[in-house]
Image 1 (cartoon, rainbow, N blue to C red):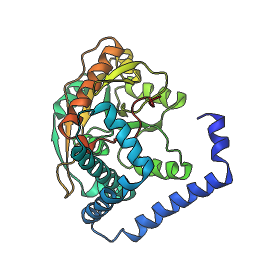
Image 2 (cartoon, helix red, strand yellow):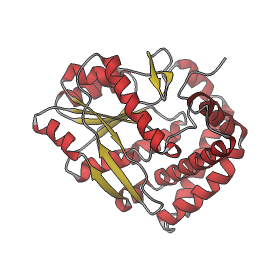
Image 3 (cartoon, rainbow, N blue to C red):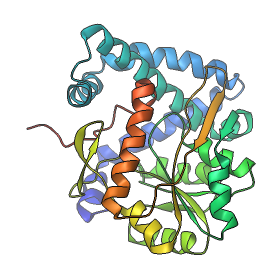
Image 4 (cartoon, rainbow, N blue to C red):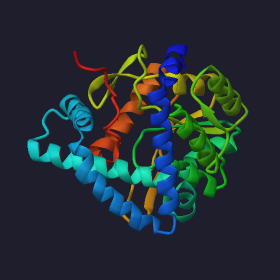
Length: 296
């Protein structure tokens, strides 16, 4: 992260806000720990569906994304998708707050595990690519339950206290856990090159990355995952973990690997597959992040 980011974050009011958010999370997790996880999931999800769309910044972000990716969505459809996308986000928040319970209690229906096993049997690493869709941690857990340890590289949270806490949680679901940046990328390369497996979420915008269609709209898309697979001979495997019901059941589908080729073309295929997931059930994607460049 840049020094300017740290200078901004070191302002007293930002430090106070970090502590308040982190403190609220820990208190929430402690107070609600005795409550059934999936009951809590449903109740907080209902609150999120009702209240989050009323927050101007959240509503504006959702509508900006809908305007770009779903221009034909009518008013009623837009209102319903706002509500369901916010419900999904609220449920994810509960599942991360109670991550230890989530990885113990979640039921996962696994499909396509043979695509991972074929690569591992040949001594190859696996670069698993996914999106902020469903609950992506179910993918690493599914791989682990099938006997394959899967690390992850992720973008650090802006809240440093929350980020440090999350590192502990995420590591419980598979290692190594690496943060995006030069050091993390070196560790990722070494891990995959020696036959390891790691998950990368590839649906976040990175300024200056190549423009590759995503839901039919040019989107800045890093080609690092594809380039890493090409350099190391690893399999580039798209995978998705949709929520199947409101009672703790998820799917984990590992798709056929992307054929080796030019990294931009490989990532175009990845974006196409992610787009197909979203088109099937758009409410399970994280519409609250800014996937496309801000409109002028």
